[in-house]
Amino acid sequence: MANTIKASVVQASTAAYSLSDTLDKLEKYTRLAKERDGAQLAVFPEAFIGGYPKMSTFGIVVGDRKPEGRDEFVRYAKAAIEIPSPAITRIEQVSKETNVFIVVGVIERDNGTLYCTVVFVDPERGYVGKHRKLMPTAMERVIWGQGDGSTLPVLEKTFESSSEPGTTVKTKLSATICWENYMPLLRTYYYSQGTQIYCAPTVDARPVWQNTMTHVALEGRCFVLSACQYAQEKDYPPDHAVANADARDPNNVMIAGGSVIISPLGKVLAGPLRDGEGIISAELDLDDVLRGKFDLDVTGHYARNDGEPVHIPSGLIRVLIVGSSTAVFEFRLREPPSTSVQ
Image 1 (cartoon, helix red, strand yellow):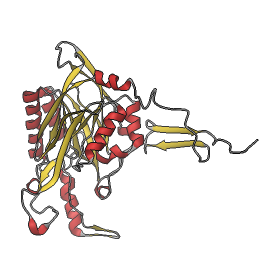
Image 2 (tube, helix red, strand yellow; image 1 turned 90 degrees about the vertical axis):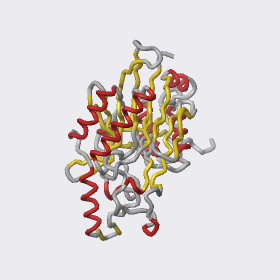
Image 3 (cartoon, one colour; image 1 turned 60 degrees about the vertical axis):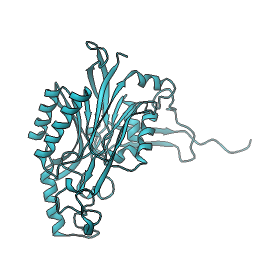
Image 4 (cartoon, one colour; image 1 turned 120 degrees about the horizontal axis):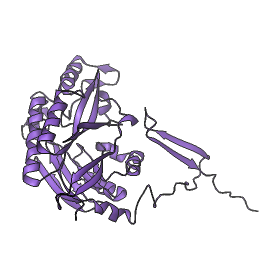
């Protein structure tokens, strides 16, 4: 059992687009995860810093944009952070003081474009990488730009064993944001890079999301740590859009949580957490990854890299994650079998 670490998933909301208040929440929950559960890794939800504008329309209809929607975007953009920035420095400080590796969803501002991003912060090295969401979902495309293959890190991190102090545990971590988890080639890329701790920050609180996370854990033979926001109307500015403007109530739920930790063999180790903010934690035995790979390695012994016969023209299918040659998937297709009778 020496190959173990303690990991926590934080279920919490942005503090009404207030950067300082949200950073205070990040520090509070990181310290609680460390002090109460001995966490060495803490995963926060999608858009935790900057906010997820649930129910907002930004004044958009096809062919027209309203002035009040532009003003709403100004407010939203001002709540976003740059990388690097004082906000990143604050997260680095929290990580260093608690000795917790932090994975957190942020809204990143790069000149005039916003990105839904995850940042990775190491207690010793500080900010070590980021992942920008490749494909914003539906209306998200109005407010967020698309990421590309330049930000698909699978990071190596050495932790001290949680069960045998003095020994070390080497791990590989990645992050896939919300509905990116429905992109098969992206999942395959991360599996091919050997991800063991598959972080999945999200705002998808549907019960069916649990099925998705279990599938990913089983398919990739990796630990899945899904952190979802839990947000009520009171967690947004008073004039923020809500589901029913005629029945505003500070306690109405906007995002319903469902954070969960799942093992490489599909066992739920903690969660799903419902009905409020909080922290779930579990001990991760990294040997469970190899136990799972024993009979299923979808980019190794359980893959057919020569390609199966398919009835489409032969040749090369080349799939690019836009903007980088570091994430290229190639599939060479064989000629379909002859149907002629000799």
